[in-house]
Length: 278
Image (tube, rainbow, N blue to C red):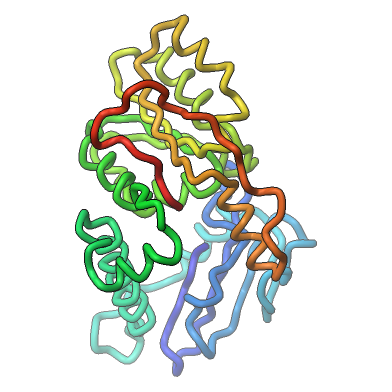
């Protein structure tokens, strides 16, 4: 989503650009309403007329190529010096940054090794981690620290993507593969196998949900037969976590999401091995 914001006095609009594919993909057709500046005119540009106004009320809807529209708009904008009457109001941007920094700090605390030993951590564990499983935040952060600077990451659609997006930085020449348009569920392992086949010397790490991995356990034979050094990180919370959250958000009781998983790491695990709560 692209936001073009000005001061309240200037009346500059908020421009939302729901993306499509290719050159037009500048955002997602799911505006984050909580992050919208208030008191602005909303203009939406989309290649599909039926999409205009379906997420948030708009004052002006434009149907056409998003890339061409934005390029033409940018050519008509002029930069003003800070402090001048026409200078842009950065208040919304700065408030959003402050909220984001505070949120990142809170996430970092969740990933800290000693989180569960503090008062908040003990209370949280009593409610959702009574078996003292490894926290998904801690696991994702540990993988980020250990992974190579040119690693290729893949991620199953669901909670595995949540943990990767929050704690794994795409720094250096790292790359990320996922089913972010189609939303296919068990994509992490097969994408990792394909990437590793193309480059056996590059580190490939798959963030797998237990539900996603279970759907394609047969491909473990492919991994073994071709001696592919793929790293499979399995978030074993014994349920379809994202589906559970979607049911709760819709006001529905949890149904059909609990998984009776096998032991994904049979044998004698190392001392640090454990399940992951999520």
